[in-house]
Length: 57
Image (cartoon, rainbow, N blue to C red; front, top):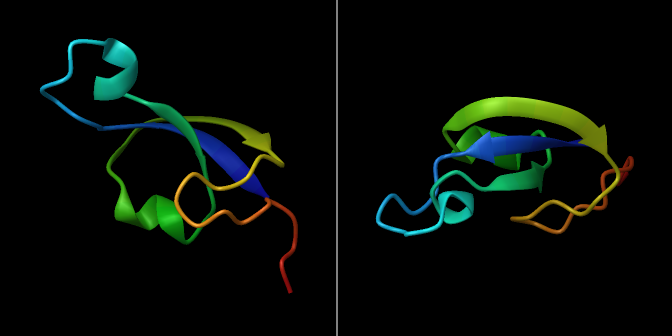
């Protein structure tokens, strides 16, 4: 299952949603980001790899 995370994004952006985006990530891809806040579980696709949030066996 994927989870929503608030991560560090584009620090030069004018919008806070781009500086600290809140995106769905899988367990593998979240390791590539610096997490600010951990959110709720989701079945939404991973922002990075497109994993659907279910067991992709």
